Image (tube, rainbow, N blue to C red; front, side, top):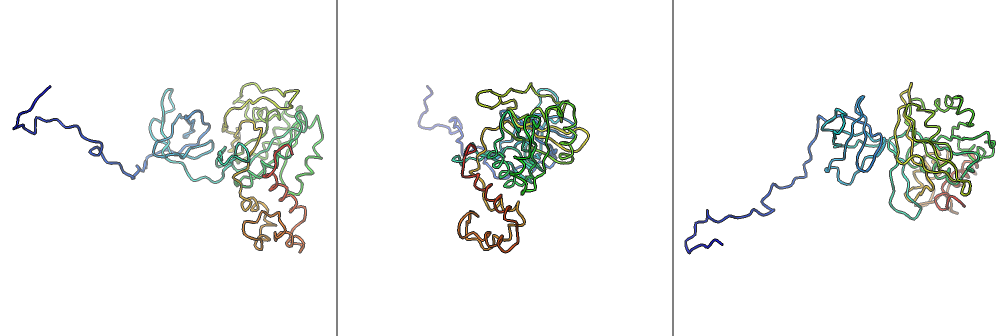
Length: 336
């Protein structure tokens, strides 16, 4: 142990700099003006697969983004190694403002909303007409999420060889939602694929549906060069299928400038986050009638001004019924 006398030289004493003497932090973030633009194709445990020009690049989120996370469909800015070579990693430094967002909660009591897809133009709700049986309440909830997030809905009804589509389509006739009806034989021959592609050309379309309805089979037919693992089968007891897609994945639609986003099969679609004032914007014939509604009107209460609006002939009563049925989907479970 070193001992010092009465007249020590201060230069002999070593001092350890404190944390306050280190480089001060700053709120100024680098601009990364040389960052390249990319599209997020899929996300897997913190690693994001992005398309940068014609290259597939692996990336991770920069710490400076904080808690903000990128999802499939996001337009991002990347720096670092953008070569796309094996074992290279780029860094996402910016996430562009989103034009639309498909969100859901695990259930209606869960306040934490999950962003499923960003920047999609439309939401294709895929449901089988039989095996498994249609679930209109789940369809309603998907439609509400689409309207709330700024996506145009599209109904894709599969397995029409097992049951006719008219009864189900009647429920949505007043919503003027485009639809495509397919059978298993048509999917195998390719005739159904051509009809579906007409609805997807030039658009980014997210596909959603519960397991067993043929969603991934349809995506495989639309994008055959991106074959996924073999599709699951429907459980004969529960009527539900196995999940065959474990994470959202964006795929280019060959021959067009459209994109298909396959999402994992859902068993529930929570709507805790939905604001009725956003859903009403999907009903332009009814929206002006809300000017006389009380504050925070649910549009299904005695003082709602929409009843008088419809009674005066400004909109079809069936449209108001459809709106209220969709809004009521937020308050009931899909099995009700």
